Image 1 (cartoon, one colour):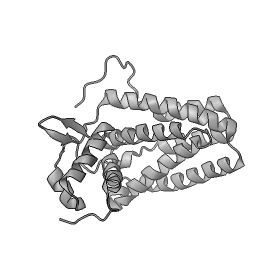
Image 2 (cartoon, one colour):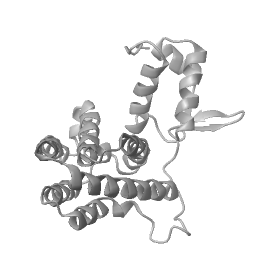
Image 3 (cartoon, one colour):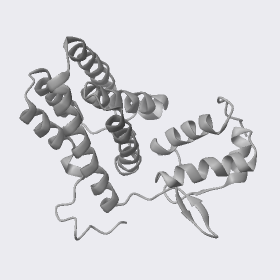
Image 4 (cartoon, one colour):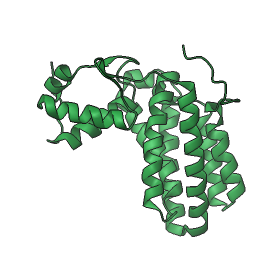
Length: 229
């Protein structure tokens, strides 16, 4: 077994394992065994359990007494709720940024989109992630970077930090469901629509573009969620 190289300490292991869970590196419902993972990371069992409990408290792992930790299975009702939270936070963050953002913010947003669009062209070939496994992580970081930059002039770090937590849990489920790092062909036009509306300082169009980007993850009637396979 190859020991992973990471910064020492539980915080670094937490960040790396959270990234791997978001990338759907582990199959849904797989049991996460402390003995296996602590050997992989080269840490004590107590450190590994601390990381597992932190990830479980944030929803990235499931925990049951006597059964331990498992990778969550994609759940359409939870994905609906995560999507609702993303919509609320991103629309408000974008609204504030459109009011407060300066020319430098516009330049950063355009640059973030340029990087994202370049990666999305590569992901149109669904074999690209299999050929280059790191491409999924790179695109995920760029996609998050674009959405975060959109909100970055909002003036609230708490809003952005809260959004990050919901964003990563959202990504964990859509990568499970869609494969290909969670990339869909329509993402290209949707991201461009968000960019154009934001640079035009059109709040209504920006909110509509954000909704169009995420709405396919919503349940039409959240009171009667679809069954999970």
